[in-house]
Image (tube, rainbow, N blue to C red; front, side):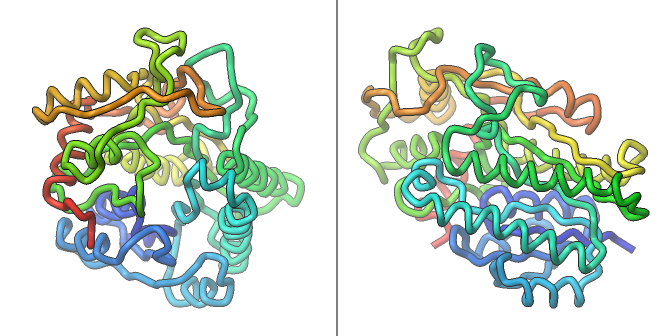
Amino acid sequence: MANTVLVTGGAGYIGSHACVELLQAGYKVVVVDNLVNSKTESLKRVQKITGKALTFYEIDVRDKEGLADIFAKESISTVIHFAGLKAVGESCEQPLNYYHNNVYGTLVLIEVMCDANVRQLVFSSSATVYGESVHAQYSEDFPLGAINPYGRSKAMIEDILRDLSAADKLTQSNNPWKIALLRYFNPIGAHESGMIGEDPNGIPNNLMPYVSQVAIGKLAQLSVFGNDYPTRDGTGIRDYIHVVDLVKGHIKAIATLEGEKFQSGGCHAYNLGAGRGYSVLEIIETFEKVTDKKINYKFSPRRAGDLAECFANPELALKQLNWKVEKSLDDMIADAWRWQLKNPQGYS
């Protein structure tokens, strides 16, 4: 019988793409989502793409009783935990909201998992847990030092999960926690069908949906924050990864948790990134080349807290998860643009 995976935040951008890959890999999928940042239309489309059904519960992960009912009803073997707020700027304005949603929400989830005896977890973390470094390429053993409440909420959750796993050794648990912390770099792109993609509420926080919305005429102009960084063209450099490559990393993580490496439990962090960086201007130039659309942009002052350059060292994910990126920057942009053209107003 197929294993059942609970996907929290499964109606969101990354969550919906994960549901597609899970269903196609033969897993049964149960989604919980409070629909604060997402729409049920994404899940209808996931089922259309795969020709397979999933189970959906509209519930907040902080609702302990509601969550416990779901664990009692469904035979869940693994949880992929995406649910949470994720805008860096907003987290600086509303830190309590971020800590309550992200940290408390995770505490409730793992308490319910403990009660239900489900101890296999893939956690959606972020490269924002790292501090500033003299090196542009980040490895998992770099010191952590998040510089905003969003990143700190992810780092706090990582600490909680490491402590939870460490307690197994002290109590000599015969059902130890098996936890993969996946630190994402910059997911972009969309499913190649153009049926699901990134649908931000209001003005996008992330570069790619902003560029797409300028290209389609929804927004007038892109602001490029900083053109005086010590980089090859003066603009910030980031590691961009196709969302489908990213979610395939989660499928690999589940297989790894079930394998020999995690036989006696453990909690391990993995970078999910391409291992190379692209500048903002390179993204714009590639977008113009792939789509034949001119992007209207202007340079603005740097934003506080933005690094000049940051990209992943993905070697550990290759070695232990047998995962690496397969899609190019051209693929990411072509897929993001197809989604935008087919869905100029997103899911609505």
